[in-house]
Length: 115
Length: 116
Image (tube, rainbow over all chains, first blue to last red; front, side, top):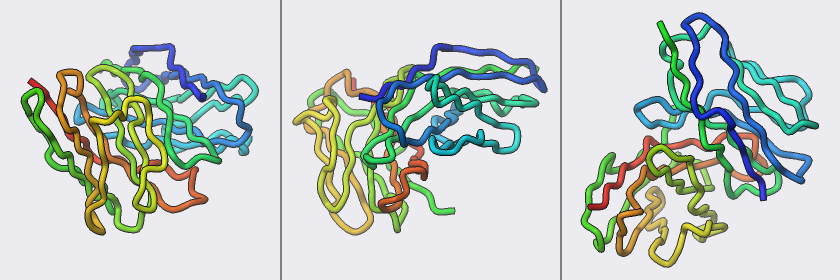
């Protein structure tokens, strides 16, 4: 079974600085998709960024980018120019390309942004 | 942009009572899901639903749980006899049709269930 591990329960960053959140996963599949979701205090689950495993190029969405290392099964999220509104729980998630049934989440990393 | 909507936003119930959590998925989506998040813990998969039947369920989804799509728009999660440990945030999600596994799940805002 696929597992997703986020080894940093909490992270802190100064406003305007850069922070990297770690995620590793375990799978025997070669084709899959990876996601980062943000959960602010409102408890919504908001998609931040996605990555297809067959793509070598790292995904980028404005201030958010990933470092996808397929061989190492690592999928870290980099937030540049951190803003106060970035403060939230961040969940890494894995989804099989073959099974449309579910998405597996990591335990989450709580990000605090200091003004 | 279309959204997944969930009602109520907060439900308080007594232990042993039945609750029904309601969701309206995005209208052209075909896959529906329920997830649970106990306070401070990870988001856990409960069940997926496709073509009017359960396609997969986790070990959490025992006989106390059931899902239904009673009409063309609603997707409900019923907990028959609630326990204290059922207190959690319950998220409904939906997804377009096959071949779109790279598309993210679209989550609702969740229903906070408190069992007293």
